[in-house]
Length: 169
Length: 331
Image (cartoon, rainbow over all chains, first blue to last red; front, side, top):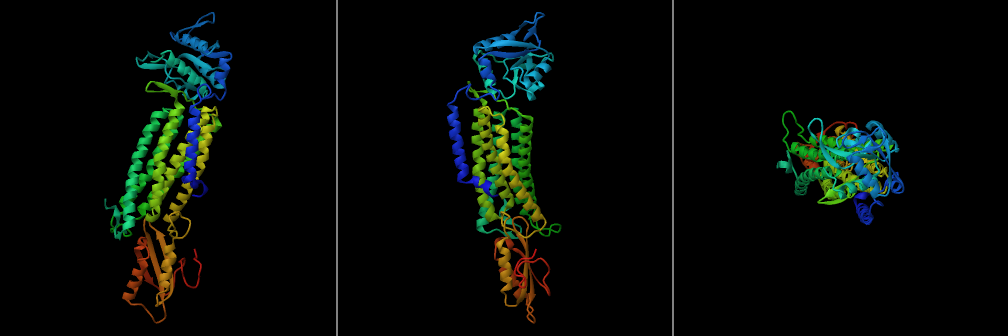
């Protein structure tokens, strides 16, 4: 109960005031300056390519024999990429493989009818839901995209895009 | 509530008021913590951070509950099976409260360390508040500012009451409140850091405050165990022997018929149990009236020592404070 407990008095109050000042100062900053990505994903995407992993899951995503992709989620990604001035690079594969690549930083987004209650929340940041569907068990499920963990500027940017396009369950 | 009485101890006015205030503060604390659980739950979602906050909040419930239970039990009269009364319930409460505090510090430190080692990057996205979308980090910061204020005020008020009440549960709970608000400030710093792209900020901030919490928890636990081992009574902060020990030894020593006097006092929780051993001067064996008069004088030194017994002996036992031939206090 020495030193540290001194915080209880005037120092604690001063710390709080200082923090509030910092916080209010930061409120003035807008995205994508704040929040920022630890790995600068959004900055990189805005200057070039959005790397998207797709696993087949109709009607959300469909991978054709010639390697082209279609589907409602594919459309969302294309529209988003256009809005930030990026071109899309598609990588197809199994969902678990794609999530692994995402975690490694080789992909920016993984799509393909991923559900909000999917077990990937430890390996990936799941966005807010963009659509609702009925699962095979007859229960309602919400659909999300998976992003690399901690890339909060990209996460916020994509979610803002959902909101602006009225993509809600 | 019969809390203003500890069986045969009638509390003095100051202590009685302080105790009533403390009981009220603890009920407010429980209500506040419940409110904080709701606020944190609404803002943090079902993330990892939420789990950590939930564990902390659950631990914050323990000290106030321990205090209220201890006070209630301590007010019971002694009976056949509990001839010393129920004062030890306060010591038990102190043990519970200090374990909660230490547990919270350790949990925080382990959680933060694991997060750093695994390189956990907390995802914080958008949140909608009444049709406005904003970064959820702002909402978390707002929630933390709101939830840090009640423990800051409550902790300070409790510390002020702990001293006059000689209540270490209350002191431990005040430390818990300090832990609560400092964790809140750490979270604010952490979230701001995450916003700046420093994924490690949250964990580092948590680690920094956990050191102080662990220290407070360990100090309290050490004190609680020492009290249970009947170590010499100390002041509420546990740093120095309680002054009433010397005062009582001196009082006995100055009695005309006393050759040698020694005192031992243990902390039963709110109150002390004091034993005064006296060796009468050669040929001046005291009368019952003299013994009672001296006992009364010792008792009146402090409200905490009403459970004082005086024992005339031929030779002083070991380990007493204030024996004339050994000026220091032997352990």
